[in-house]
Image (cartoon, rainbow, N blue to C red; front, side, top):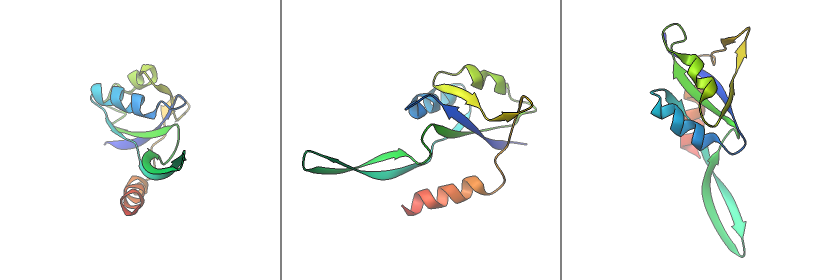
Length: 103
């Protein structure tokens, strides 16, 4: 059964990690929100990670070769307990997507 898991990335490496996870065939989700950026009397809104240094990856730990996530460019580690990935509780990703779409 596929579940969502949390990946901790290198500093400012969320996009790079997402790109390389997608290239490997994983479903990766990087929640973003528009943040106000002010510079030299110019105000701009740019998408920024909702959770800096974190993104989510969807896979079935029983069948997927999930250990290759650990050596993916941009990934620092996968959130685990006793060397097994910890799934995100059901409904959390859907709630995050709802908040992201409202903003």
